[in-house]
Amino acid sequence: MAGKKIGILAMQGAFLEHQQALSRCGAEPVLVRTARDLEAVEGLIIPGGESTTIGKLMKIFGLDSLIIERVKEGMPIWGTCAGMILLAKEIADSQQPHLGLMDIKVKRNAYGRQVESFETDLEVEGIGQTRGVFIRAPYVEEVWGGTKILSTYLDKIIMVQEGNNMLATAFHPELTTELDVHKYFLAMA
Amino acid sequence: MEEKGTFKVKAGLAQMLKGGVIMDVTTAEQAKIAEEAGACAVMALERVPADIRAAGGIARMADPSIVMKIMESVTIPVMAKCRIGHFVEAQLLESLGVDYIDESEVLTPADDKYHVNKNIFKVPFVCGARNLGEALRRIGEGAAMIRTKGEPGTGNVIEAVRHIRMVNDEIRWVSNLPAEELMSAAKEMQAPYELVKEVARLKALPVVNFAAGGIATPADAALMMQLGCDGIFVGSGIFKSGDPMKRARAIVAATTYFNDAAILAEVSRDLGEAMVGIDISSIKPEDRMQDRGW
Image (tube, rainbow over all chains, first blue to last red; front, side):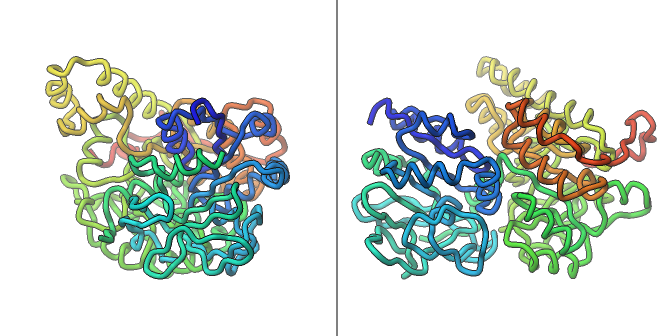
């Protein structure tokens, strides 16, 4: 995994936190804002942020179709929180622009407003125990096709994988000092 | 064990807002325009700062029904302002479920000595700062996000520029001090020693720092980003301009592509009239909002 060029979509949100985590894993992070930035990377992380903001900017600057194309060709992609929403084929009660790549239906702000945001310990298949920081977080209401559930918390689906190149988490591993989810993604890349 | 209201989740929401634009709105319709234009959050207000400045008198927390209507109309985070030191307005806003409280100098201060003890709230707070000492005093009280004070409602970016340059100069200064000089630095800045040590270690503030107070154009937003701000608050600049939707979209794009002059030039075209600006020297000292709070 050393030196692997991994992009972080840098439209809006917590992209610098992912950049630092990837560097600590020994990968080579690249902030992606243009088509040329995207060409240079072997994998992509869509960070937490506001999914409506990131989705609109991706569309206006033409990155959405390029990302969809790359992922269909096999490029690994991981969405955290807003990133999970943008990867979903279906978003409950919303027509916002998104990538629609994963066979999941997500519910936005599923735990409520900011005062309901929380952190807790999670069990993740293939990783073990990790810390989950949930900020106005979504969860997955439904999965279909070959999508695999990697973690649930209080009966809600909060981490999924589809095939060997698509990963989504409702929580923010980039806000903790733990690197296990980043390493899990780098192993896919 | 599940924990709510921790400093990590409070500061974490501010981290999710980075690289984005938070827009002042006074109605549900304006909030929807802001969301449609790509705002990462809105600030629910009764009047924008330019109108507060023009109206004079005592400016207070917005009517709860205005805040609630705005919360119902958008899916992005909603912030609201309380007066400096007015912890009951803060309690009330927390009970309404707002996502962030701005303890703001735009409103008339309610206490001439003490800011709100923000540590005891579950809802996170953002506060304005003109220099590192002020930023660290607010963080010491529990603020999970900092912004420049600038001079609100003027459409004049000079004060926000002064404040971010001052904070960054002082961070560079503290970062280069030997350990034995940090206590004196803390004394000089009137800042908590533990936080001064933290800044020296991180070579940065321990929380997100946004630009606020006088940003009116896409170029203003990009200037503040290039100077090292993490994101942008636009107060009067959008809904006091000729074409709010177009200007809002342009400022959002400029905040993402702050380093790309070609894109900045493109989005700055044909925006219609910007808000009318005010020269800082024409404001009487007692009317300067940035001098409220300590």
